[in-house]
Image (cartoon, rainbow, N blue to C red):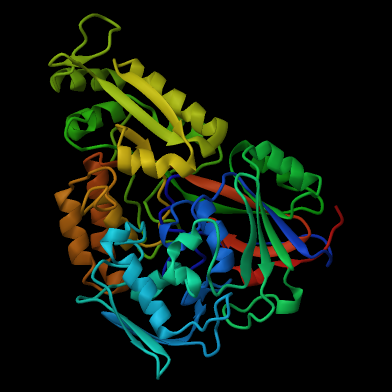
Length: 525
């Protein structure tokens, strides 16, 4: 997918929410290489430019964050041993002796440099305005071993957001070109071999003694190999024949790894399938009447069943469960399935059919919808695209489908902007992480890739952002509902995934490893 712009980790509902964490196991101790299947190449390995769940899988092995989350959902030390949270700042005391893979020390200045990079709009980091607010500043104190992150106004999730700030250090901090196909982090593994579209090999750092508690350093695998396997059926075959130690699976292939002797499988939520209309000038979606008419022409429940091969669940919000803000923001706020009404609404909006069955036109222009979607979604995503195209062709839309690779999505979506409809799952853990994506500056100057202008959303989120934690939840929920009422974004179905393992235990959530938990438990191949 183009974005999980922000990855979800295992976090308690009382703090930063999360998808359910998967801890999987199988077999008995043995082996020194952990093989994990990924569906697409991770592309650029600079963590500040990560845009897909596969990218986060790759960077999470080699880069630390200031804090992390344990299996129970508690915020626990990462590069920081302790922290002090205030409404508009958080001060971290860094672990003494933490080093980059190249041997250089990780200092408060290192953290400050990473924050400055992300919050500099010239760097076009997808984390800008999402993981870190644009106005965040840093105060490093090398003598005290602390760094303070501050915002001019209260920021309700200031500690939890740093969970997703992967820290670059050493040579890569001075020359980020090194991060295109290499790593320069303080994490427990270091990239030692990169074969694009084939495999990525990481080697264990023997002197890594900080971060999240997990398997003792001596019990962690000597190597972790991410093997690119675009076909999920092939990935399952590799698991069943014990050629892989782990993988994340979606769609119908999930059933093949359940109740298999020697294979552990755990289900978890995997974000929400949703799509957006481009609302910029000249695009059909710039007219809310057209957006609502097109939604009335498609059965969203059936569409959700197609794209998840029947494994999905009805959506109730945009933030991955468990959420800090409870409640159903979706039900009752999207048009019901009524194709006859949809045709009438399109007529009223000025898009008429010259003859029965013809493509609708307005002012001499055809009603053309260019639909981009992730090719990594496989056959189920392609079937969903065809289903949607068929429904809209019935009401006179000229549908043009285009499957786009994860690596190319940013170019097509944000730079070329050659689309009218975009299937772009977001996968966020905090409601505040959405604001930079669906409000604010448009791409390429900002992250508002669909050029949304929802005034109610902007007003409600601005007020919610001044309130601490759960106090702002009623406003965050109303803001989500305002998006659906205006058909600005359309949640179709909650995705599920199965995390499967053979001969290993590990914890991963929406693509992001807790790398110190990886441990080989055995099984012969």
